[in-house]
Structure formats: structure tokens, C-alpha cells
Image 1 (tube, rainbow, N blue to C red):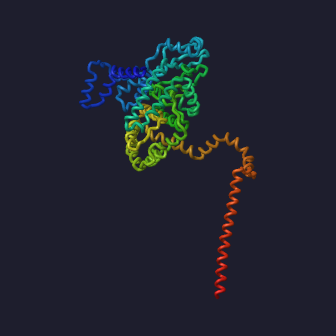
Image 2 (image 1 turned 180 degrees about the vertical axis):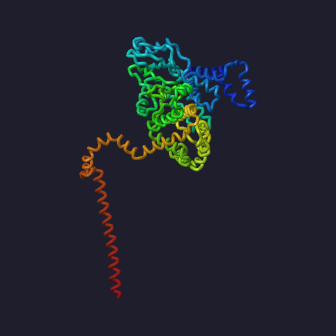
Image 3 (image 1 turned 45 degrees about the vertical axis):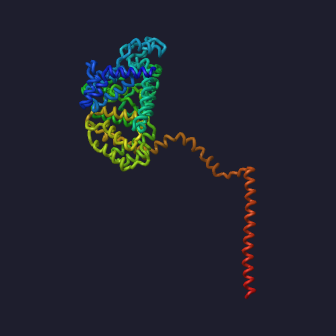
Length: 518
């Protein structure tokens, strides 16, 4: 009943804010316009459509808010009025009351606010779909940010995910593309990630790992976690000072090099994906800032580590080979990789798949980012792949989402950025490190502790291998088999001797007869 009630609430919200009118108004056919008039009859939809869409997503909860956050980065696909309103979902979701936030913090730590902080700002500095952030100062003088999980999130997310699982099952049954898209596995992936995001200790662990990975790159700053004050519902971290990347004019006035910033963003993304296999998968503008401090001027600041993507070595190698083949316009190799990885049936014609990929990708090369939409390329690849039964890989859904976010940020910072030209040298260098002498040395170094245990044992192992070993005593069954084999051998020998004697006797008899006849 709770799920049915949630579904009714979603339908009611769609009708209340006129989202049906927003969707249908994109069509220009006369009969669709007539349908819009019919479905909106008797309803007052005075607010702009972007405001209605944003308020509906806020009303529907965290899953819809996150969907709106992704859409807000795609200004090439959405009208500007919708994109501007959805951008407010990145860090301006209506907060819960300050008294509730204080109570949650005190409950998490089992102490009063004043016993932990010398100062705690009751008004949140940022409010998102899952949690909100308050600035504070610890008793030892350290300035920190306190992230507090929204109350009641688990029940809402579970209800929405149940509806998504049901919808995914129906899509697989009713849609011709259902099995190929694997919607149930995709929803299951998001189920895991959303529940992980509700555990703030996991988020703190993600931040610590990303901070270690990025140490030395000098392109990205990650806040340090204060582990003494980290629980599943409240975490305390180092306060970061930066300007949101969406405030372009302020960054330009400060003298930030936007071209370098765009290139650094691509470098950070490909480093996290191909070097570490551990990447920030929620890189919308609300989670990215730029430092203006003199010692770290122009560096990115990453926030909100609830959603982190991971890739296996096999995934990384497959993606790297695909990217390099794309950049070299080797579409035949791309088609072969799809077959080798099992993404398409083994009997797929390579030349046909190669032609389809070439038709999609070739028109987009050698264009600046302002003229290239990765979203449109992915959409066309999706359409072209239907006839080849290409299966969507759920483990790469987050990577695809992050890549779209990177494109949105790059388009905002430097419309002239050529994504392909910027990424190609990095991937080629990475591949050389993987399969060249440096890669061999790195792997030997990685296996050195294992070799250190084996090498001292080698003389003993070689001696044991070369030492003659006594034959084991035969079992009674084996003795019986050997005795039977010996009897069989004697019988065969007697038969052979008899046949031999018979043949010899016949030959001697014939010779004697011929002699006597002569």
C-alpha cells in the first residue's frame, strides 16, 4: 500500500506542477497542441515551466533531484530556462530546520553542540538532496564543515527504488530493447550507490582514498576528514575555501586561466579513471569549486564524495583501447573490441558494425567542444547499436554519467576545448606505461613482496623436484590387474608361438614335397 501511495503521489505531483504540459509542449504537431489544451483545462499553471519542473523534483525527493542535477549540466540539450532552474538543485534544495540539524548532530555524537564546537552556524551554507552542510569551529580552533544527513531519507529512497525496479521489469518484458539495455541491472547499480550515499562514513572513506590518490598531482584539493567526528549520519571535515565553478564571472575577475582549468579537468578525470580506477562520479557544478588562495590558485576543489565509481583492470584496459581506437579513427578495431568483450554477439559482422560506428563518430572529429555534443554522439551510437544487439554495461553507467558532467563543465569553461586532442596524449602515455618497460617494472615492483617469499625457497623446491621419488606401493586392485595382464600376455605369446610354428611347419612341408617330387 505504501508503494501504491507513492505512485499516486508521483502522478499527483506531475499533474499539480503541469509536467505533462512541459513534456508535451516540446512537440509542434497540431494534434499534440490540442492534447495540451485538453490536459491543462481547469488547471492554473501561472509559474514558468522551469520553476514548476524544479519544484516538482524537489517535491518528489532525492532520486528526482539527482536526475535534475544531471540534466542541469546539459545546456546543449535543454532550453536555457529549464537548465537555469534545475541548476538550483545542485546546492540550493530547501534545507530542513536548524533545530533539527542541531538535534541530529547531538544525537550522533552523544554530546551537546557546545561541548564539541566553539562556534556552530545554525544556517546551512549548502543544502542538497541527501544532506546539508553547516560551517563550524572546533574547540582547538580548526575551521570545519559539518555534513548532516537528511532525516527520513531511507524510506523515501526505498519506495522510489521499488518503483524503479518494477518499471525496469516491465521495460524488459514489453520493450524490444529491454533485454539489451539490461534496466534491472542498471537500477540495481543505482540502488547500491544511493544506499552507499546514505552512509556518511563510507563517504568519508571515499574522500580519504581520493585525497591519497590525488596527492602529488597538484590539480585537485580534497578536504581532510576529522575521523574523531565521523558517524554514519554526521561527518566533520576540513573547511575548504573556494569559488563555485558556476560563478564564471567571479573566477574571470580573479584572473583564473579558463583554458588551463578546462584542460586540468580532463586530466583529472582521465587520471582517476585510467590510473586509479577510482573516480568522483557526482561532478556537477555544485560539488566543484576553484581555489583562489595564493598557494593553491587555480586548483579544483572537490566536495561531496557519496558517489564514487570504480573500474576493474579489465574495464580500464578495454576502455583505454576503445578510446585510443576512437581517437585514431580505427573503427574496425572498435568493432573488434566490442566483439572480443562480448558486448555484441560473436557472429556479428565486423565490417557492418565498423560502418555504423564510422557513420556516427566521423562527423564529430576535429571540432571544438562548442560544436561537439557527446550526448548527441552517445544517443546516435545508442540508436545505431540496436540492430547489433549491443548490451549496455551497468558497471559503466556511472562513468557515462560522469563523462557527460565533464563535457558540461568543459563547455562552460572553454567552448573551444577539443576534448579528443586533450585526452589522446594522456591515454597514449597511459598505455605505454601499462604495456612498455615502465609497466613491466611497476608490475615487478608490485609483486616484489610475493617474490621475496618465494625466492629463498627456490633451492629447496628445485632439489625436491629433481630428487628421485620412491614408487608408491601398488594397491590390491592394481596387483590384480597386473596379474591378469601377465596371464593375458602369456596366452597371447602361446598363440603367437603356435601360429609361428604352424607357418614354419607348412613352409618346411612344402619344401620337402617339392624336393621329393624333383
